[in-house]
Length: 213
Image (tube, rainbow, N blue to C red):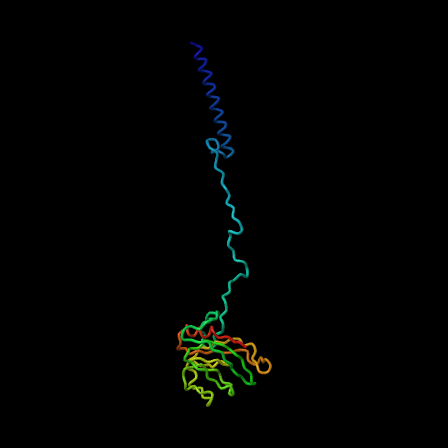
């Protein structure tokens, strides 16, 4: 009967040793700050660092400010915004393309092209160096009388700003004018359109205007 008791004694001793070893291991990990490692049964999943390529980062380089395309001319008389810089190639229905010369003292001249309405006629006095008028008003008579009272109804081209409150005026760089030799006497040419026209008609005239020489 003493033999089973001997086995039980050794079993208790071994169990005590195991318990003491477990306590020792626990205390060791507590001091090292890795308590979770004692009871973790699975390996921790490693954290993957996200890599960002330089091309994936959007940045604005110094001096890369986007600049809008300048308009075809500069408004001078009324502070209206400039229209698109693109020039129409073909006049729409009810309009036509015309070319003409405007004369200045010297004598000198420059040539230009522009879209006008079908019913408009050209009027100017090349001797008196008047503006070039395009109008449907047949009472515009600068050729014979230099009376330009009835010439401002529709459109005009001139070497100076007319300063007329009924007109919207835009200026264009002229560069040079010609007689026998190029002259730099006039640096700007002005196109004026009646304010009563729609914005689309005004812009069609302004955008189609070109100095050709």
